[in-house]
Image (spheres, rainbow, N blue to C red):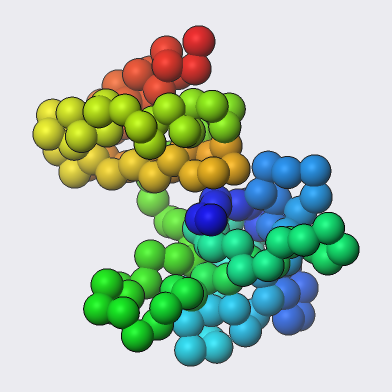
Length: 148
């Protein structure tokens, strides 16, 4: 599963990430592509991170990774995981995230709004970006109206 999170604590060899759950997750420094990443230097408290869940069970803290699960695949040439520096992140219900994945709204907005990208995650965060501020506000209002 792919999730968004907010950096709570930056340790010497790990980050503690709020993933909108009862317990925070750990993102080790080694969990980046090739074991190192220039982006992790930019990661400070309250930075937004896009990662995948690499381990989750009852006995251990959830662990995240900012690298692709299959590094040999062709689509992994541009790594989408790591620090998110632009766009807008909103917290919503899991029901709305699932609803967005199964609706045609995303494809319609992509055709209408210039430079529109959206990623609804499985942990109640929705990230989106557009090329203009006005479009950003319009999309935010559409998403907030869907919440109700």
